[in-house]
Length: 277
Image (cartoon, rainbow, N blue to C red; front, side, top):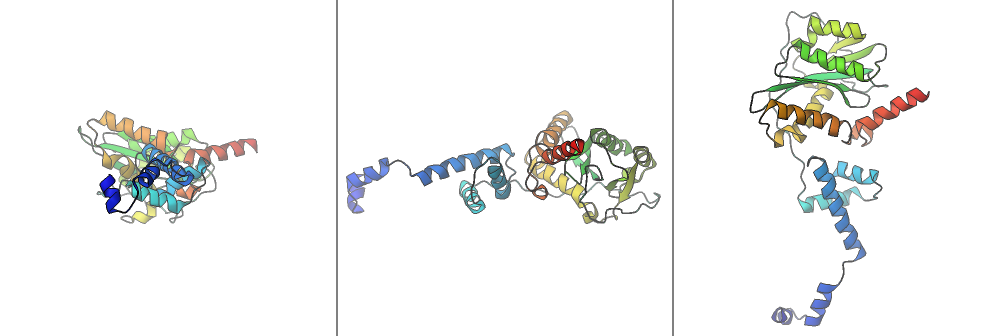
């Protein structure tokens, strides 16, 4: 070390004084911030980008610039997982009665349950595929109904909408929107909707934007859960999916369309205000 100091024209005592100097307040704060960023990133299942990490910091009372968060995450090598695309499951029924599109790509709503969207996706396991049907509330962005099975007949989507109807009070003229898959245009599903007082709406065949909100949830599910792990059994996959929906997505995941708040917080706030009124 003495030789290096001579070559660099630095005094030995000056080097050790610099080496032993305690970190500055700024350095200490940045170190603590980096540790908290790492915690938030890990708690999200390594799925949060810098915007959601920044929002989580603000929610916990830490005032910090989003550009600093982005820079620190880049330095730390914290990159959120990316999604892989796969073929859809939609098979239209050519014999189904015509059904109108009551949504028109407007996935906003004035109250919980007023407008809902749904879709089906496949999750691969070591025992074979598992199929998940969901019902997403356009107001709170929460998954209010879901059903999982080894097959995907009409009863799968019926079970999902039944769960949604039991979990939140549906307003008069509530709408459920989906693609034109045979499960959603079936007489069985239509009877469930009629009994629950829900109007049926479908988008056009092969136009993903007509059901973009439902597909967006599956994109998050695949990105944040499915595509960076494998499931040996269907039971394991089922537990992981339920844990993701109820333990993370609904209750903790910050949604940009909600001002970076979790869906359950928005839903609970509306229900509380509605009861008080």
